[in-house]
Figure (cartoon, one colour):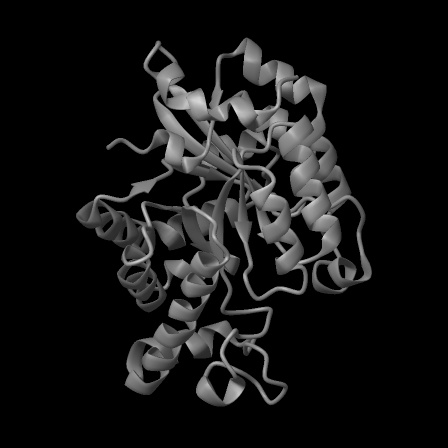
Length: 304
């Protein structure tokens, strides 16, 4: 299996008749050393092409050091406004945090406040700007941006992310749209996938309009929403078998070399080691090669 260090040639390969393009991403880069180790190894020895960095996470400095040693790895900003602490002092963003100084977990209430209260939007903008600035100050090239828990689906968060990101060279954004048919190929069952596909449709349509208006690249489909934390080899192979032609698809993972105490606390039901194994799987690498699915970073698929 080849390293994804060759993914820089992906755009040229697409021009030679390949129509299925694939971004293989690891979320939560910087959250834990076990995550960082998995990202480095899965890029060097597996099929990983990109990682999304949490600039304020406990192991962010280690993640940045590893990223700088892997110039072919596409690194993006994993904007974090929940399940963590702000980069700015809590007293500067009091309406974003709880009494412990961490981002408040009540997303529905916070979402309403983002939309209706100008002072909350100003604090939100300041924190988003601080995270983009921290990414830039790290000396990394911005491949893409998304948000933890897909919070950039919120119209206020999206608008601020796009406005602020423009000054930092933002050119690609994750669209959290999962095809129900493709998800079922990966083992999705029951009513929930259909409900979320229906519920998110107007939000995704609005998001696409915003991205198109700004000329930003985004994926046609995202795989991993239904199977978040459980992207095993068998699920991944099922999804790959159903990728539509002439598409740009992102598949995202939460890999780790071990389920550390922090990961067990934050994501007790996830299977980070199984996801790591899927990224290293020879069967997955062979499938991508045999079916001429081109892996790359978002920047490899950006024209101009």
